[in-house]
Length: 119
Image (tube, rainbow, N blue to C red; front, side, top):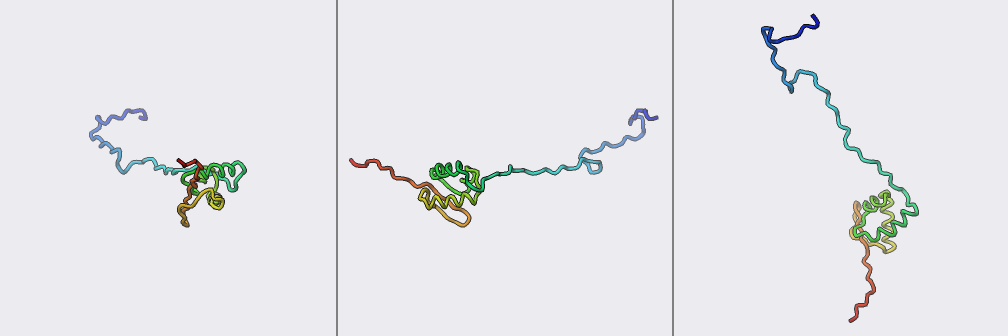
């Protein structure tokens, strides 16, 4: 009896076909996505000697200087970048374009080259 083949044609009534998207049957449980994960930043809290020298050499040559640009390029914290940019302003290596409580924008100082302009 257990191995008896099932044949719908031999029975009087045929069962209606199930809808694949219907409501009643068991479906797999929905898996929740983990979401996007960002890599953990390991930015410096204090300058080491090599990073500080790189900061003094490269940052005054940038056309657009903000704390976020310095933080991203040199891998330092934003608070350290803000303090270091204030130091560059006091040394007259960069100048302030715009200052706001949320955003500070600096640029390089154009140096006049002493080329002879006489005719």
